[in-house]
Amino acid sequence: MDHLWNKLKSYFNGLLLNKWFYIIIGSVFISISFIFFKWNHPIQIFDNKYTIDNELFGTYGDFVGGVLGSIFTLVSILLVIRTFKEQQKVSNQNEEQLKIQRFNDLFFELLRLYQSEVSELCGQKDFVDYNTLRREEEKFTQEEIKYNDKDFFDMEREQIQIKYRNRKSYEANRKAAVSYYMLFYIENSTKMGAYFRTLYRIYDLIDKSDLQETSKKNYLKIMRAQLTDSELFFIRYNAMTYYGGNFINYINKYHILKHLPAFELLEFKDWWSSLDNIERMGINIVYDNINRLIRMEFLGKSNSKERLKSYLKTKSKYTIQINILQECDVNLILQINRQEPNKCMEYRALDKYDNKRIQQLLDCFIKEIFIYSNFEKYNNLDEIETYSSPIKIIDNITYINSGIKNKFQKKLLLNRTA
Image 1 (tube, rainbow, N blue to C red):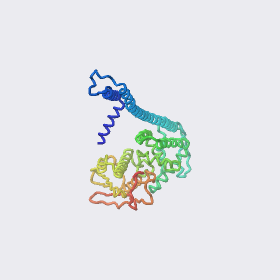
Image 2: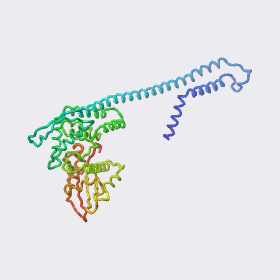
Image 3: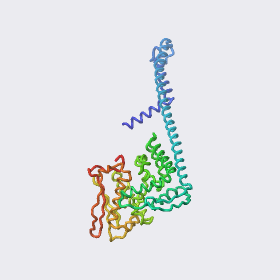
Image 4: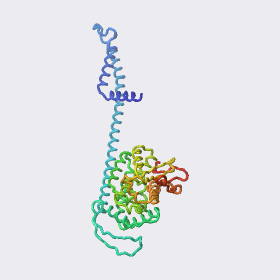
């Protein structure tokens, strides 16, 4: 019925805008009225022996002028109202286009400023070798380096990764990583400060705009395409300091670090320092797929679930199983069949670790997913605990597990809307 009503409404709206509709209706009305009012004897209207009654004809004229005139006045008012609404609609569209144009001007101006800041960072500079955390007296050497495009971020990340020294625990490594980053920031504070302020201003502009969510996503994709893996590396550590605290809200809200290779972080150096590039990339893929599958399960998204599950449950040496219990307890189980050859490149690095080291790595993965990747903003650390069961070997298959749960059986959170 609603569909039929909308069609009828659309049809009559079209008639009201058609001038021939009024011409035809007016002509028919005048003709019929004329027939009944022209002669005293309307039944014999075509008999020429009857003459026109002028008084009656005058009355007819008053009738036409009063009734038909009122109808046309009403129609005119309706048309004026409709015209006003159409003009208002066009005006609103123009205003929206003007608003978008103003936003575009500011957004792309800030984007050009961001690119200028990157170019400035990638210019010529004096590089100072430092390692103050070791508190050893060293002779600092200075050498002139020229960066191309975004080589600045790539080379500086590599320098920090080379200099970094591992600690005994994952949490201790996180604190040490921030200290190493601060040494870098202090050396480059002028340029890096301007870089981060510009980046923050862009996301602040998008967030506070009146644009529709679909439009916002398009601008966010433009920004995401600008950021390299190495930039994401520095954005992550800057947000862990006093200087980047305000940026955390936008990092979490817009998933800015979504494509950050987590296994390249300084906290994981104890594992990746002995691996080649292919093996490091493989572990990154394993982590990324575990992370995505857990998020899909929590958010109820079915797309690609089966593909990821089949990937994690390979018919080779390594198989990963993810168990989610009422969304307050998540457990990873890695099965290792020592009698099977490893057919997956992604798991090749695990061949270099013993069982205990693999379990420690899984512990760090699950902490990273639920706690540290969102800067401890979603789950109350006082309510969270991680756990792992003793490693078991049954029928030549090794079972290694690692889990995280809320002690009060509250739902574990992966985003602000969960």
